[in-house]
Length: 368
Ligand code: F6R
Ligand code: MG
Ligand code: MG
Image (cartoon, rainbow, N blue to C red; front, side, top):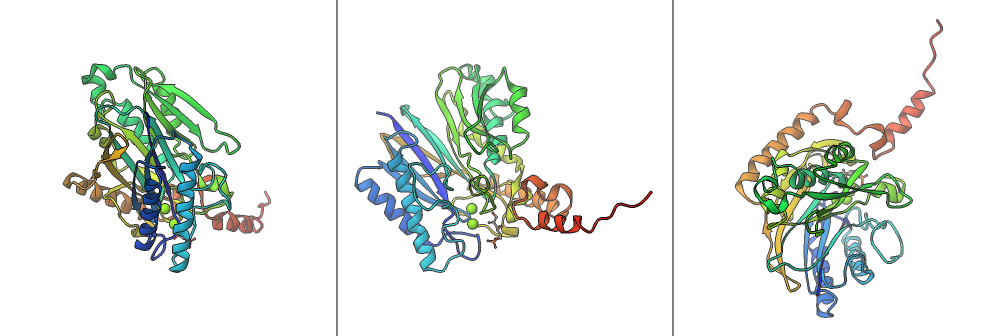
């Protein structure tokens, strides 16, 4: 029997501003997934938070895109929204952009990533959850972790990985339908780079292993402003990555995060900052950020999860957190000038556009 890992995440309200969900909301989410376990819908589940988002990791045997699993997640977020409202929390129901559930959370607000797999004798995997950024935040670390021997030393040292990996990449600006392309490394390396250089437009959706055809990674691709037509909070994506043996090792997958790469997000979804790898259940703070990512390692066996290993809770990452803070402070010192703030097409609030329109009417053409 196959096992499915489904990670579905949403901001349904938070304390202090856009900082973290309340304990009562988290307790409600736990009770919802526990009762789904008791009814036999899930074989196991975990509830965590990253900044103001609640993430549900659900294990089951129903495959990806199963309506019962997606409805469970949606109903859980409706229930945590009700708690947030009853407590007077900020942004209650922020990511629930549609009134009625229609079979799948994709296109409705929550971020989701799912992999259906035949369990290996040992099945290690990592769940990444990011806050205050778009789904393109995973482009750099996923591509480097799978395709670049600077990080994935297994490409050189482990013969079984020599055939490389296939990347399915989505054009997330195409709102009417999923517009995707499938490209392989090593043969299509430069073509993939050409797309991934624009992480607000082209986003890695999945990675499969060329030699076996097995899926190694899945990442969420939803862009909230494309769904709602206006800014309603950043997308705050999730990803699942299988590791070890013929896949990159857990450490190889984590390696690119040591760059603390710049991404678009942070305050008002409109600033470039460095991604900070954080411990599980970390909050949002400085400048409504910085953009954060957490990484939980698990093994799944016969549908049951082990306890999590908090992969960024290790002294090495303290240095990277300091580096991320320094990089963020460095670009923040530039305020709104040039690359510090998003370009016009990615500005998430309308103030600048409206001001430019008003000022445009006051411009005059100088006579020669
Ligand atoms: C970014 C984010 C925050 C808000 C900011 C203003 O994703 O959630 O930076 O954009 O706090 O929030 P509102 O517009 O809700 O007052
Ligand atoms: Mg929020
Ligand atoms: Mg969030």
